[in-house]
Length: 136
Image 1 (tube, helix red, strand yellow):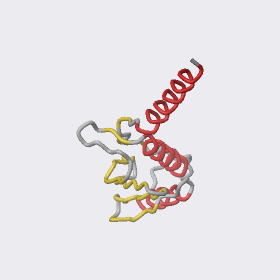
Image 2: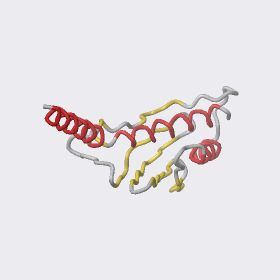
Image 3: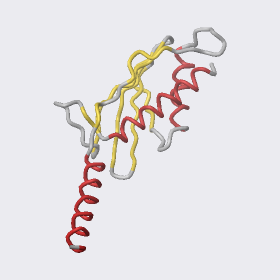
């Protein structure tokens, strides 16, 4: 009897671990976030670029930012075997963060789902960008 209960507990523990490891959530994108500055003045596009790029260094893990053109940055995050890449499109009034590519994050295009770590990284990046642009 004890052996049977022990086997059931082991099975339950393994099932719970697999459930936690394999779960996915809807992809989180930031759409048209408004830029609010401490001064109340509209920043220049160059100021917004600098704020977004500097926000990447405050993220853990850090994002690698590539300015494609004024108003468009491609940000790439590499964390162990995982890779996330996003487009950050921005103006002097706001910005959006949209998934561009990913690897080893269980992305399902049909369902629009991804590993929860991706969403956590995007939320941290968004929070850091908001903090940096608010200081302008």
